[in-house]
Image 1 (tube, protein in one colour):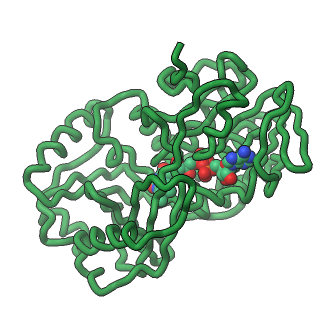
Image 2 (cartoon, rainbow, N blue to C red; image 1 turned 30 degrees about the vertical axis):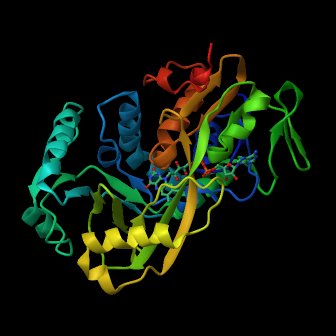
Image 3 (cartoon, helix red, strand yellow; image 1 turned 180 degrees about the vertical axis):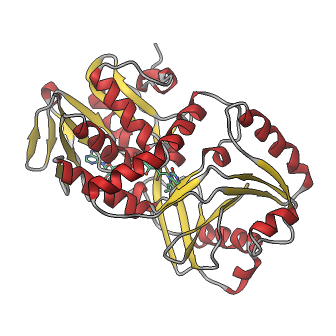
Length: 364
Ligand SMILES: Cc1cc2nc3c(=O)[nH]c(=O)nc-3n(C[C@H](O)[C@H](O)[C@H](O)COP(=O)(O)OP(=O)(O)OC[C@H]3O[C@@H](n4cnc5c(N)ncnc54)[C@H](O)[C@@H]3O)c2cc1C
């Protein structure tokens, strides 16, 4: 049994804490403010790697696919451990195109993903509207991915926190910005926590650790602005090249999301939300007279090469990083938790994780 401190109580820190506590370790989470109060609580909750990843297959695609496969059992386990329910919807997705010229890229994506066992169907515009009658007549074709799903992220994160508490994780919120002292002791306001391992799961704030950890950690905040309408209800996640729509059980239709460079500013801008409005109305013409009833933003942790930072530091093996999940942190929460728990226990990894090693950005 190891004593493990996790710095950062977002979806990644909470998932790791739950998984490790379940395996018998003694877990503490130190969160500067409130658990789930940053990117994790702001997310649209899509578990949609096949729509998100356009490029060729790589170990990141495999990581995302594995996490999607883990999700049905994982979310069930979290519900049982937390003794609360949250929305998990195996809705499938429709990736819609407005121009014939984009058909080739859909076909190409379908072809390479099929080799990985992904189920998908190329549909005509009319077939798409048969599945979703509210969608625009301008949509000429689309890719239906029945395996993609979504959850209600704020409730999922609250349930993870409750699952941690119920299983005995010590959760310290409002601790201020924690840092590291000598011998890897975690220092926070009013706390000095000794541990065998420390996991840094600080999302968009990870660059602050560069000096302390003595290595380059190029993780940048990318603001995502997002909004919600009251209905109409859609059965599938709807993707386009410029944005997505996802209908939640509570009657809201979430439209996302911008990708802005704005430092650590989480303000909403008229330009950012205006662009989302324009696109949602193009996808669902019925929204033309509607105005979003809710707007918000969060900071995605983006890395220099687009891959997360997962694993221990070679030059300080008691420090483990789990950060930089950018647009897919909700999706990647179960697989990250299992990889980090296996890494701490010295178990062989089921997936190749060398591309995600945190020290890959060093010059030497
Ligand atoms: C608008 C939007 C939509 C998104 N949609 C999706 C989606 O549909 N699907 C998906 O999979 N992903 C989505 N994402 C991405 C996802 O939200 C992130 O990848 C994920 O939440 C990152 O989780 P995290 O735990 O690393 O970071 P965070 O949730 O940001 O948590 C990091 C925590 O660390 C704390 N912290 C930082 N520094 C310190 C310190 N020194 N001491 C103590 N605590 C500290 C912070 O306070 C914070 O609570 C979306 C993101 C946004 C913004």
